[in-house]
Image (cartoon, chains in turn purple, green):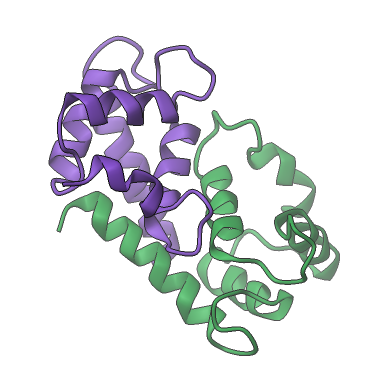
Length: 95
Length: 95
């Protein structure tokens, strides 16, 4: 397996691990997103207010669920400083 | 480092490895994308015509360069069957 295939597989595995915890196993609830961020990006989240804003940002279609596409868009946004929707957009969430 | 951080780092490393080969080191030319796909997703590409169409799809802003955001959007689209822009959209490219 190539490095890219491994990275894709790991990203899917992380999403699935937290998405299956409750409710729809294909999507993240706000509680599941909170757990994911606390475990996987431990330096990122800084309180309930930040979580509320991030979840609202990610839930583009307003169904109170974050699907894999919304999640990957978020991960991509965090991954590169060249993105228009980049870390600085989240700076208010980061302590 | 968490699994998600590792996956993010690996995706960046793959992009950087091929982007730095020629020209702008922050973006992929069509030749660089071709090499990346051949090495990293060896079962995906099926000829120059497919490459032309994929590159045109990915180069959203028409600058003949694929930047990291465009690349990650593509990887995300390949990663999940639940995406609107999913594998079936590329089925014509796959042998």
